[in-house]
Length: 66
Image 1 (cartoon, rainbow, N blue to C red):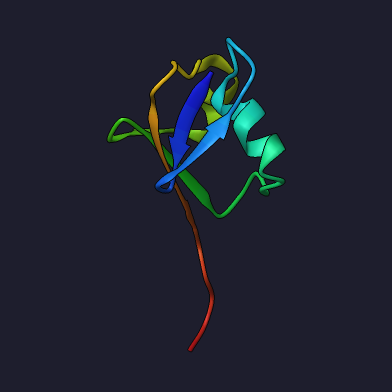
Image 2: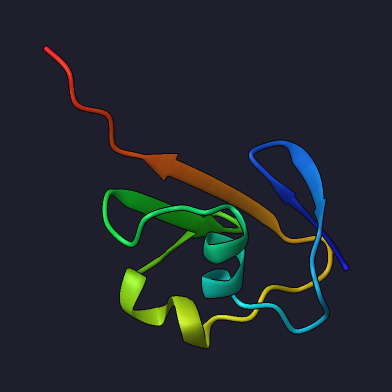
């Protein structure tokens, strides 16, 4: 299936979860926020939140700086 991640189409396995997307993107478990179709998904729910074909996913990472 195809989902859009930060404006770019990505192919994922059918039934993929937010956790699977985070793993595929090689993202850390902390300092990352994920929104699916405009709704923030708490990190504790990533493994239980399936992605549907056509989903719009926004991935935000925390950046330190001064």
